Image (cartoon, rainbow, N blue to C red; front, side, top):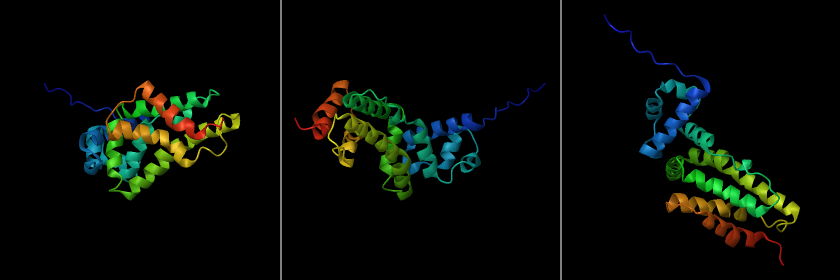
Length: 197
């Protein structure tokens, strides 16, 4: 007597997308962006390659969607009425994310951006820009409360904190302590924006 063949439960919708996103991040960490393929992602996700192409037009689109799905939204940083607290919360969120499971995938993407103008443009539009806008909002609220000088939060100032965190975590491979993040805020960001005494 032969046993019935094993059947694989078919995943659909969000369950399938989550499996695909997990597979993208695992493949990025394992092989890097330069060797990432739709075939490899499909095999790791245990789905058909056609399932990927039905949802995403290109590998770049898939990668950006996966990273966007996993990254926490800096806009979730609560308004406390204290710019220092809000900046500490925002930078801590970024640091914790980059030193977590998604860190190797983001590192791989950064390395692949020079190879793919499409990836670079998509990363700027869907990953970087929304988070810069969220931080800009933190500064705008602080200016409205009189905590910082109006117009002091230039694009370079807004990007300074995240740039330091990204460089430290991804380029240097170090973890930032609570004190490190406080130093970034207190020694670098706030002196550039505080009202003159």
